[in-house]
Length: 335
Image (cartoon, rainbow, N blue to C red; front, side):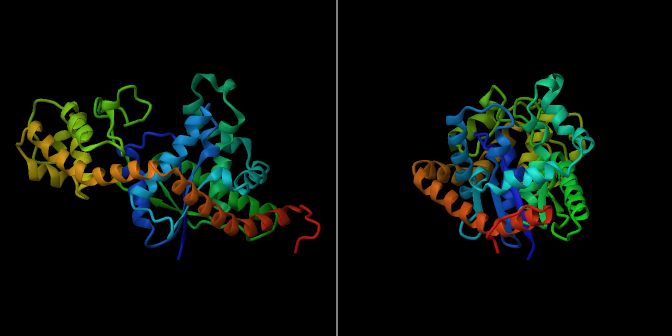
C-alpha cells in the first residue's frame, strides 16, 4: 500500500474551495492508501500570524478534516509543530537544495510581490520544508493541485540530490496524485477571482461551517447574469459567474458541467439556484453541524492531534536518524 502525505494551512474559515479542491479528495483516498494529513502550522508562520488565531484555526481545520469524513483512527491527523523532525530534516535539505532551485519557485514571487527584500527567510525556504514534510515519512504519493506541482518537483529533486550527495538510497521520489477539475472554485461575487477566505465579503464564499440559512442566502445573492442556462458548457465560456455556479453544482454532484447544462438547459438562474441550494445544504450541512459539535469539545480535538503526533513521531524518527547518519552526525550511545 502506498503512503500519502498532504498538508493544509490553519488559516480558518475553511470554505467550499478547500473542501472540493482537497479535503473531499483526502477522505476518498484514505481507503486506498496509508495517509498522513497534517495541519501545517510551521508553514503558516512564514507570514505574520496572531498567536491566538493560529491556535484556534489549527483546531478548526482539524475539526473540518474529521467532519468531512477523515477517520483519525484510520489515518494520522496531527499538527506539524508537534513533530520536530519536520524542522530538523528541513535544515538538512536547506544544505542540499540550491538557491537557483528556490529562485525559480513561482509561489514565492507571488507571495513576496514587490516587497521581496522584506520577505522572511522562512517564506523563501518554504519549499524545502514542504519537501521535508513529505520525505520525513518516505511518502510515495502526494495529492496536488496546479499550484503545488512545482513544489513536488522540487521535493523529488531534493530526494535525488540527497541520495546522490551521500551515496544512499534513502528517499523515494514521491509521485503526484493529480486532483480533479473541481479544485478551482471561484468567488460567488466575482467569477474572475478564486474563492478565498481573505476576501472582505463573507458573501463571496460558502464556508464549510455555514448553516443551511447561510448557504441559502449566499447562493441567492451570488452574482449571475440574466441569460438562461445553455445546453452545453461551451455556452458558458464568456459567462464566468454562471460557469462558476454550474461548476459548483457539477462538483457537489460528482457530475460534469456538460451534464448539468443538459439537465437544466433553458432554466433561469433563480430556479437553478434553488436546486443548487438544496444540493449544497445536503453536502455541507452535516459537515457544518459536526464542525460545530467538535468546536464545543476542544479537548477531543487536542486528543486527536496528540495521538496523531505520537504516531507520526514513531513513524518518522527512524527515517530522520537514517538521514542524520548519512550526513555523518554523531549520536553517542545510539544504536
